[in-house]
Image (cartoon, rainbow, N blue to C red; front, side):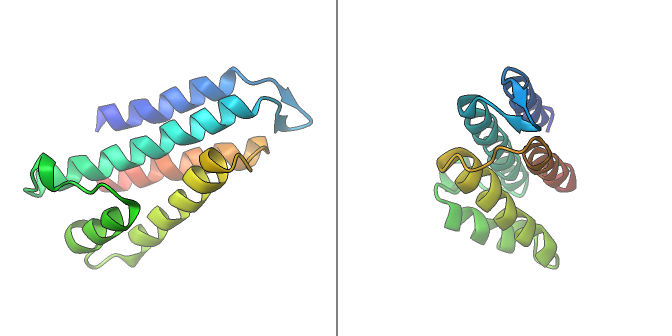
Length: 124
């Protein structure tokens, strides 16, 4: 799991490259990149858990729907909170932050990265 936490650290480093003006990140490029890297860290953490559960690399998910199903089946059997957290991370980091570039507030972006880190910690 050290590798997955490194993704979060890399995301924070990317954010540090953006100037902050009025509690907003001024450079969307770094925010989008940081959100993408943090989301990849979450996916990597899920993959590591699935490999420990006995899946092969070939069986690992390729699409977000497959990640949800794998979480339900192998990790979050009795914990719907984990699946909801993954859905929030997908919506916030991947869609709003990376794909659409809609996250700008320093507090919002840092909160999304903390959510990703907490999710990874729960998978340990």
